[in-house]
Length: 620
Image (cartoon, rainbow, N blue to C red):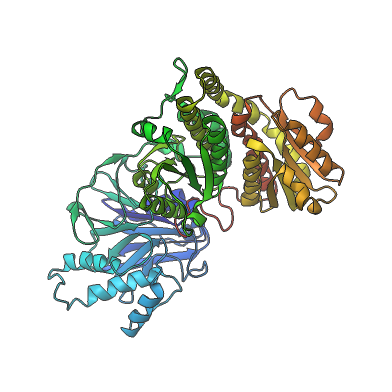
């Protein structure tokens, strides 16, 4: 969840660290800090609050300070205050660490370190890492300890990592070695960017791309040591390994605001372009088939599958639920969508012929990664649907499909959701074609899918009208979002968006379930958002709308273009172009994203950095 950046090179480190932290602030923003090697000492500057607070505390950068580490925090252990902000120094003042993850055995280690007279100044688990490295570095009487000082630092890091239980992405520096930087990873992303005689370690490529597009991605239980002599990678068990150099596949321009007020708004508006990229080269309109090269070798196995289990969390779970409906409708295969956070702790039945699909924007979601591991242990073939190239899920699955929508910076996911649905739709159409769907039907869905980006443009053009709806309703503290069939998961997603960024209590439900309890919540003027497009359950949802109106609720209705009949049921009406029922979620979710965005802005909230949330949930 936290953001890590570290620099070693020829330039002043401080501005590079601050710029990198700003690009990573969406990963955590309750405190921040930097540590710089200065004349044989480590200078730590840190503060609670946003990076702008930290920036005001800094002196002018010194061109001689060419090694440093930085961190922006999303609190896990210890409240978000200055003492708990990273970097953390060890008790000797020689070792500094920034860390993303959770150390599960930190209490045991802390008790042992205190017995060795190590002092602690924070409530964090990270300080245990710093003190453990510091203790090992300063007490190397063991027979296997190295003789020269440089190896001693690396040795101490390796041996400390072998004592940790939990997850970490970390960067470490030592005051005795002003030209050495160490990074390590287990369960939390870490990347090394290679520039011209300079190195940038970060938890996200967005902090690297300004300096270089060449990077290596560390795998679990791997570490990298960079120095003025170059770099080398090894396991934490001291086995040398060779890492392939990768190209970062997006430009600096992709992570700039480019005139938009917020990243969320930019990413909402990018959806037509993003979906074109996602669908590009994958829709064979001439032959009426889908081309998904990433899973090409597995089509026979997928086609013969008896059951599909989709694992995801949050917004990705909502996309997965739509995928479940698509696979059952178009491919006629038994499918279920599981919360990865629950799947990992159950004793799930994974039989022969089970395909598990992991869905995640970042490809680093801790719960989803754990669910993948459990599924693979039980013999399932595991596919990934992720956005970030080289991410942990991309490396952990047997095969998969990239979203190809570019970086998503806004904490509230938008363009990744529509792309996840698009990928699941492509999978369902092609699997259906291979199992039972006629070529004519497959071609129809492919052609309709190809038209979605331009139809999203028509929905985006209604932003100002949707803003007026938000102005009339955003002060109400309780909302309902209701849909049926393929639009039931859209109701869940619309409610989640409103909760995430507007801090309005919202509940998403299948519309038919309202009368089984939640109808008791309806009060005079309460907003109820209905997704009521022309579909197989259209008449049923009209009845649900009337139930709400009869009890004084205010109806915000998302309907199909040209539907004149529904106007009399809507206090506020938003229309979307007509598409087949199975593909409607990619359109009907857009006005709900826009509605949540405007409501949050009108209520004065920071849309891109909602309270208590971070973009990538890499801790349990």
